[in-house]
Each structure stands twice: as structure tokens, then as C-alpha cells.
Image (tube, rainbow, N blue to C red):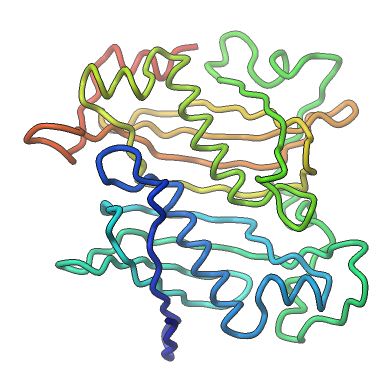
Length: 305
């Protein structure tokens, strides 16, 4: 059920059980899914849902930027009231859990665009209120934020993660189930990629999730994340994802950056960028739920070249 006031639109949402991987805590990816769903619901309630925009106007309702703060735990049994304020293209989202104290579990900002979909027959002009959101490509929205890298005949490893850079590189094929509107990767595909590149990075540094959980009772926890799309990427292109830890903060969290590239001609095109603030939560015993203090060996592994 959705309700509207002069200040915000509110819809009740619940996380999917897939996101509860450790104890009954929901992972950051599913927080971001809920924020995206709240914004998409805003459009649908006003008669501008994704299917209508695609079929009638030939436009793809696309989330291009999402930034979230996660100040409290979300449990698998929780229901949240998702409050959406603002208006296209930029929205503010707040998720409040329906439990004692009504904690805010997410504060976020989401930006959307309507990307023209070639070859969609019978398209009508969009409503005037949405016309400013229309763009030919995602790349036309953030060209100034892109940092393409010349290939100069080098491999992805040579150019994007050279020895001594401390960068971790993961190359992967964009599957259809990360895509939208029959072609390009969608924002949530990058959310999934961020979760996976962190997992792969930690394993590469001898800090795999399973080993830390079994050996120390620690589990990674996220307090802040952002992902911005910078260019279009088609289904089944090869994505080169670079992950690097920039800083360790107060001995309890590490600030890291994700950048994604596609090799096109003589250039590694910068197609997305993101940041994530990670720490470890104690997963068992009396201190369960509290932040773990990182020891020297863990910090050295995170920032090692």
C-alpha cells in the first residue's frame, strides 16, 4: 500500500530472504534493492511505470546513480516503510523498520534517467513533466566523470592493475540476467558486481568470508555505498572491474573504490564507478553485532600491493 503526503510518498516493502546470508541480517545489496524499488514504485503510482514508459514512449526507466547510508541492521523478518521525497530526476529515500523505536535503516539518494530505446515501435512523446529526463545514452549524462584509460596495446591487467598498484582486477562477462530492456546492464547489476568483487578481493588477500567467520567470528558489514553508471554496456560484453582499498578509517573500517571498464578499440572505457565503506561485525558471542577492531595483519592484507 502506498500513501502520499505533502512531504513524501510511503510504500511498505520487505527484504527478500536471499539477502540473509549470515544469521538473519540482510546484506547491503538488498538494502539498495529496496531503495530502488521505492523509487520505481513512485513512477508506477503516477501512471509512469517502467512497462508503460517502455511500450508507449520507447523509454527505459533507468537508475543511473544510487548512494546509501546504512545506520542500522535490517533483519529478515522486517518490514520497512520506504519514504520517497523529491522528484525526477533526483530522489531522497528513507527506510524505517516497523519495529521498536522505528529505526532508520537506510538514507539514500537516487538519480534516474529515461534512456531512449531504439527500435521500439509506436512510441509516443513522453509526458511534459518527464521530458527533461530523456537521454539518448547513459554516457551522455556523466561524460565529465569518466576517466578512460588508453590501452596502448596492453592487457587489462597491464593497464588497470599493474604490479605495485594494490588494485585487484576481476574480468567477467555481462549476463542477460544483469540487464534490462533486452540489452544493457542495469544499475542493480553493478550492485551485484560490487558485492562479488569484494568477496573475490577478500579471498585473494587471505581474508575470505568463510575463513574469517569460522576462525574469528567476523563478517563483513557495509555502512555506506555508492554506484554511478557512466556509459552504456551491452549484454555479453566483457567487464573489467577494479577494486582497491584507499584508506583504513579509525582501525574499524576500510574505504574502497570500484571502477568498471570495457575494452573498446584502443581504449578501456570507464563505464561505472562506486565506493563502499566496509568493516567487520562480530557475528557470535556476547559482542554479536558490534564492530570488530582490525588488527595489523588484517590491515596489511587489505592495503597490500
